[in-house]
Image (cartoon, rainbow, N blue to C red; front, side, top):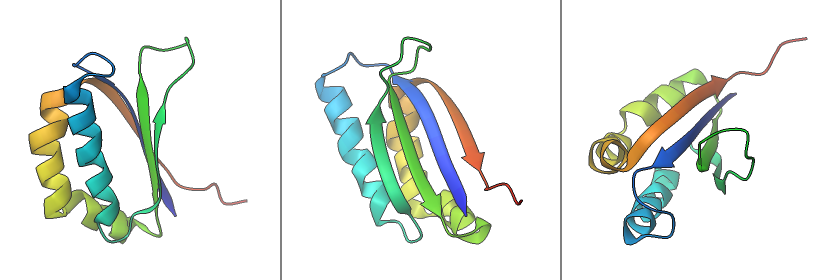
Length: 98
């Protein structure tokens, strides 16, 4: 299993039309095959400057790679992410094997 997470700050002001359009586009990522346990969250801690987070899981590395190369994801990155996101941190996790 791979958990793909990203925390980010948008260029637009909170509650703006640009923010609404961005999150409408984010929802379309859930239709990409392999995406499981999708969550979109608002960051509430004062410990960092990010405002939002996305999290999703993939059964394996192959499905995660297919997601990254899927035309809908590529379109989202080019048309929404690059234009809307000011700063971000991406982390991909695999469970520790005990």
